[in-house]
Length: 196
Image (cartoon, rainbow, N blue to C red; front, side, top):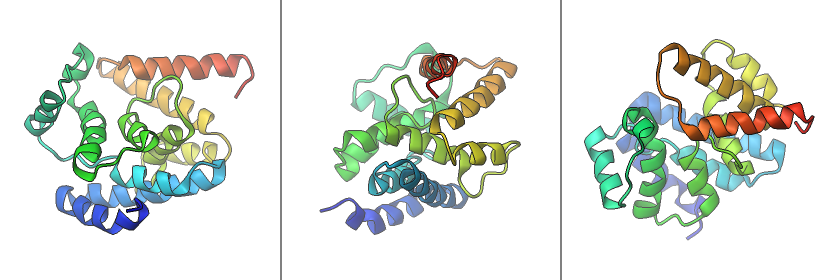
């Protein structure tokens, strides 16, 4: 069955698994992801599904998520271990494979890297990464700047998002995931070379 045909089932599952605000956020990210996909020539159907499911395990307990890691033989790095907020991206990408039998590598990658980013992001991964920052209910400081940047450059929007996140983590003396640093460095280097 086509993934878009399964969307009503995914939505029902999301509603049963997520708190109301998180459920609404997921619907909003799916919408933002479609808009970005259409703007930047990504696959809109894949963007919708990845946006919809990106937080599927967000409200799962740490214990439940640790069980998913154990089942898949995944050992957390020190940075990941002390930052459970990152876990849902990892467990979510495994959950959609296990429970929904999703095998599309682009969708799995977009879910997996929507919190940290990474060097060498695919177009779909960038779309979902930014959609998560600019979804309709977001109201943090500078969200309008993010939305404006996302109208013409996923890379500029990603760089702005990373500067925002890395500064916040640094201020709170929280560890920064190496994938985020790698994506930040890649974007800064591309900017210095006039590539973005």
